[in-house]
Amino acid sequence: MTELRQSSEIAQALSQSKVVAVVGFHHDPMKPAHYVPEYLSRQGYTVIPVNPALAARGQSFFGQRAVSTLAEITTPVDIVEVFRRSEKVHDHLQDILNMSPAPRLVWMQQGIRNEDVARTLNEAGIDVVQDRCMLTDHRGLL
Image (cartoon, rainbow, N blue to C red; front, top):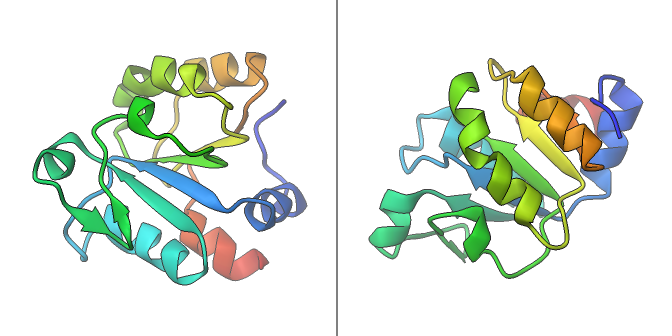
């Protein structure tokens, strides 16, 4: 497994995926951590918001109830999309590695990069995209 950099690899990953868990989802529609997942939902993806504060309030978005952690998700996830600062990505590494089945891809949104986490995920057989916008790539490639 590798870091996906080629447009063809990214397009294939996006077209073969159906379920996206969004770590760091935000309730504010003006923030990328909301409007990117909202776009994905409109494109037919199942989007699972991961945000402890929203889960504690029992909130749902795009037909899916927010969860506190990846460990609470009971359905297989194709992509874990991360909207957390680069230095915070490591906080979610163990949860990602514990997912069963493992996600095919971990996508760190534009501006987010963590080489250590990417290497560990690759060693576990999980592909990684870093520092790219899923909305932009989806619009441009599919």
